[in-house]
Image (tube, rainbow, N blue to C red; front, side, top):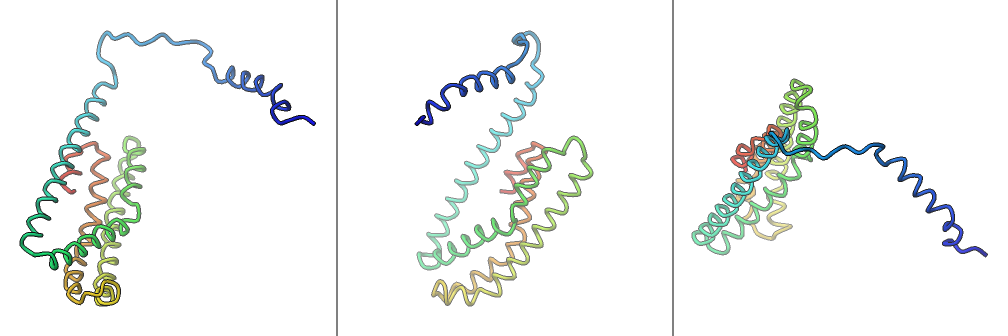
Length: 197
């Protein structure tokens, strides 16, 4: 009885070699010379500048957020800051769900069609930001209506009702800004994305 390795051992290397020969380049191109400017040099410089802006902006944003939370914890006390933290976390999670991936879809679609059909890209941007704001209103309204049940039945804290009702209107702005930040990344102007975050 033939084992699998002996059965495939004869023709498998020949098949691999023939496939490699089919995909190998027929003629080799000489390496580029380094005299004169490289065509992608400006693109790489713009990409590096955008990455630096994002890095500095994110570090500054995280440091500001941490400082704000420390100050709020100091002034509010443990119990009230805990209520604030629950409301803020609800906004973060609900805002991420409210955009339904529109921020990623805009970057994927817009970067591929930005040069070819700008009118269509602008139309998609407007529709996506409008849809994200509408979904934010729906999620915010749902949180506002469900706040008494969530506060008492899920978290067991009646004081949380007012906090959730205060965070509910922010869903519209949060989801709209998230999609707008993704839209600003298409144009490779990262500073607008950082401002919105």
